[in-house]
Length: 245
Image (cartoon, rainbow, N blue to C red):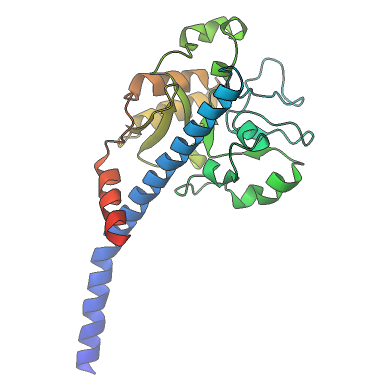
């Protein structure tokens, strides 16, 4: 009996030591999968541009939204009728994306999940949101961009973020330590935010209803134009995945 109790105690201690490490690896691995999602989205956007005379997918304004109210950057379909696709949703509508799973981050623990919209992707009878924000202003002619945001409207800039982890609500952030981003050069980069300072600024803008223009500007200023996430967490996850597979 004593031997059994000792064994149970040792196992419990080992589990308590290993659990944080496994949780750390799980989040890091999910971060890698999330970056892979954005790379796939980037490839699909590139093919879409090639087939549409370099034009990016357009955002559709819902009739329920006021003329001066910004579009929701996470909306893929407005739900008004089957053809009411918007933003990244056009990649599904025109066959560039075969499954909407690529629009959902495995780290996401908020309300906007793939399961929540599983029926909507089939029926197209209600608004569909993704876990990624799409910068629809870069798909519009510069003359159509409001003067207040015109300085940020530069589709040719490789530093401009085109798609990012969602930032419209602190409850629906994909990661607690930063953002995966896809630039207009279609390269993917990780924006580290361990201190959550950037998340705090973005959340403040969202709560004030200022819109997403300031959030995009923050991402532009802080994201390095690379195609290789530099986080040690991500590297560790790659090593762990290579070990497993």
